[in-house]
Length: 315
Image 1 (cartoon, one colour):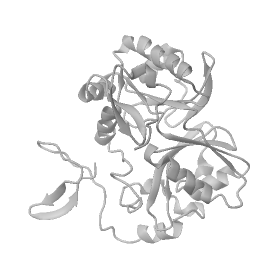
Image 2 (cartoon, rainbow, N blue to C red; image 1 turned 60 degrees about the vertical axis):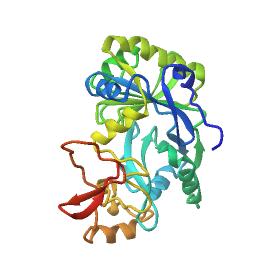
Image 3 (cartoon, rainbow, N blue to C red; image 1 turned 30 degrees about the vertical axis):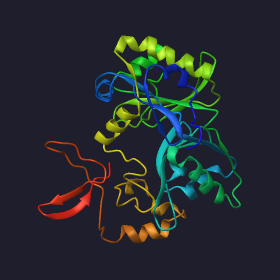
Image 4 (cartoon, rainbow, N blue to C red; image 1 turned 180 degrees about the vertical axis):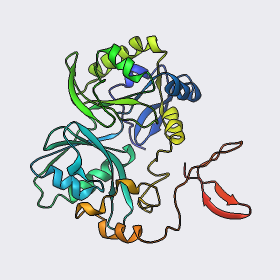
C-alpha cells in the first residue's frame, strides 16, 4: 500500500475521529459513533467530508455530445443549473460506474464519480474522446467536497450564509461565500434532503474555514460531523447502490434496478445495443431489498427461500 492521500479537511478532524483507509485515502469512519451519526442525519443534520470522490471538469464545444455518448442518461435534457444521475456502461452493458453530472453552463460540466473508480473512469473517458472537441481535467486533488445532509440541512446552510432555498432537488449553482468559490447542489447519498458543496479551488485553509463554520453554526441544530460508517448505513437504508458491492462491470443496469437512467431512445451511446437486448429479455437476477427480523445480514451471505439458495447479500 502506498502513501495514503489526505483531503483538505483532514487537519479539521484528524484528532477527533477514528480513521481508516478507503480507496487510497485516510478518512474518518466515525467521530462519536456510527449509530449516533446515522440518527443525527435522520433527525437533525450532519456533514461529511466526501472529498475522496473523483471530480472531473469536462468542457468544450462537444461536451454535451460527448457526455451523451459515454453515459446512459440523456444529457441533452439537463439544463444549466441542474444535475443528473447516470451510469457509464461498457459494450457488454456492464456498469463502469454510477455518477452525477453537473451542468454549469452550455459547455461546462462537472462529473463526480466513485473514489474507487477515479483513475479507471478517467482512463475510460479519455480513451473515448476520439474526434470530440472536449477537454477533460481531473480536479480531484486540488478541490474539496462536503455533504450537508438531514432535515435541518437547509436551515443550517442558511445560518452559515449559503442561500439554498431556491435550489430544487438536483439543482446546482455557483456562488461565492466569504471569498470561497463554491458549486452547491441539492443532492446527497443518504435518503435525506441535503446539499453537496464543491470547492473547485480549495486549500486546507479554505476547507477549514467552511468546516469550522459548520461546527459553530451547527450547534443550533445539534449537528455533528459524520464518517464513512454512517454514510454507508444511511445509503443502505435508503436503498442506494455502492459500487463494488451492488454494481460492477458484471452487473447491468436492469439487474441493478437502475434502468430508469438508461435512455435507449436518445441515440448512440456505449453499450446501447446490448442494453436494448437485455431490456427485452427476462432477467435471471435482480437487486432487491429485504428487512431482517433479527440479526445483521453481512456482505456475501447467502439468501435462502426455505432450503433453496436464491441469492446473496450484496450490501
